[in-house]
Image 1 (cartoon, one colour):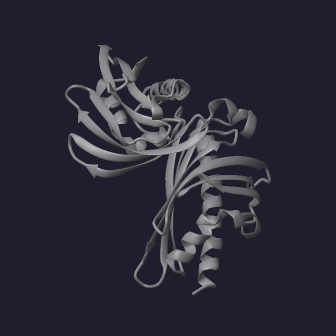
Image 2 (cartoon, rainbow, N blue to C red):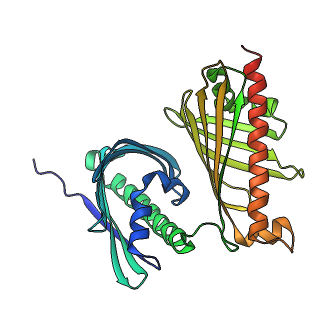
Image 3 (cartoon, one colour):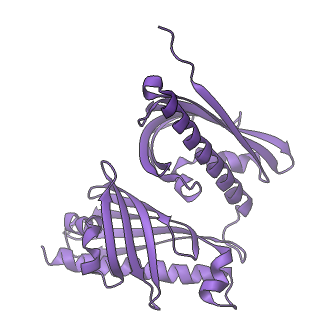
Length: 318
């Protein structure tokens, strides 16, 4: 029987950035959640100079999907090819390439190619995949353009990007500390800054966490996050519903025994300020540096408060 022909799509965008910078952003899949709205988390299973295997979690048409892909990295050719090893249904096959084409000094065209088939080669399912690929491709290329054109020189007065981490040592076993963070359905009872929680499973090791929280000044916020949980090692998350001041927020809780019966936990945050919301949220005199300072303090304070309560919970169970 003749194998059905895969459907093929192509999307492109022009970016004011060097080919080298664009290649690095595309090749570094670990940084994708901080760039691409659909990407939640990525893990390397194998890693070489030209070949690698990755696991990627992403939102696709409102659903959380995960898959394993092989990627071929061609720095000289400014190209990254990918092929899913285990496609996530309803896809039967998925592959493609990122191609960077310099078009002038400091400017490039980025093309994103896909080829795919549907389970059972159902025409309706194939159309659904086509729509999802189109939406995600447009979103990813626009996000790549915004991120690449933001600059590579680190935070400046006009920069919207913020990343930081806090590490604490807690007197308790790693399982109990992890359980406190993992079992977020109890946070409204256990954390004073959380007023309501809805936690639901979205597949093996994947959670959707919606909650209402209070900032230090008493302002209420409703957020929703996708969380990928690796028991007793880490919980990574990406907010899909954000407070007004942020255009992006990803984070990670990582856990390790210290050899003396205590647990070392690191809370990491990456956030992007929403410039249009700065004066509306923080007042007419606020600027981007003030917004970054505010987010550093607010996000850090909530994480440290959560860890303080996690430590008390774990210590009580020793």
